[in-house]
Image (cartoon, one colour):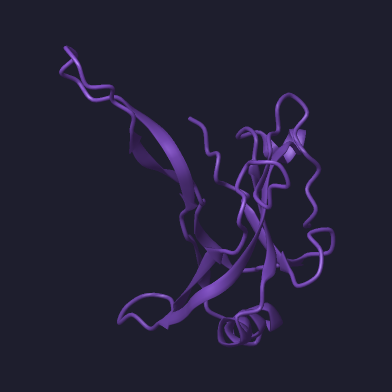
Length: 163
């Protein structure tokens, strides 16, 4: 059975996706996806069924769940970035296969985002976790000059930029 998400990593940078700060204590990630508007393009006539095509896309929020540890600089920084609304470069890496330990092949996403929500939770009988919601900050997902890049691992994968 594949464990694709095992070993996933998330990092951020204020300047460039080439120099990243890794977010430690990662518990879960909701990978962003594109949700397209539904545009009707039916030509009325004898056909009784409507026809549709995709329009512009929204990028869903990325939610990262971490084990809370506010002695970690990155957790304090992300809280501060939620207040200043600084645009960050986000990189998410996850294994191409479940053999990531031996083959070191990754799929990576890079995109600009703002910290839209930073919310620690203190449950009764569990570890304290923090949900960090990242809101896409680009304007052209997937088109010319795209600010949302998906590095498909293919056969070779991409080299991980976070240790």
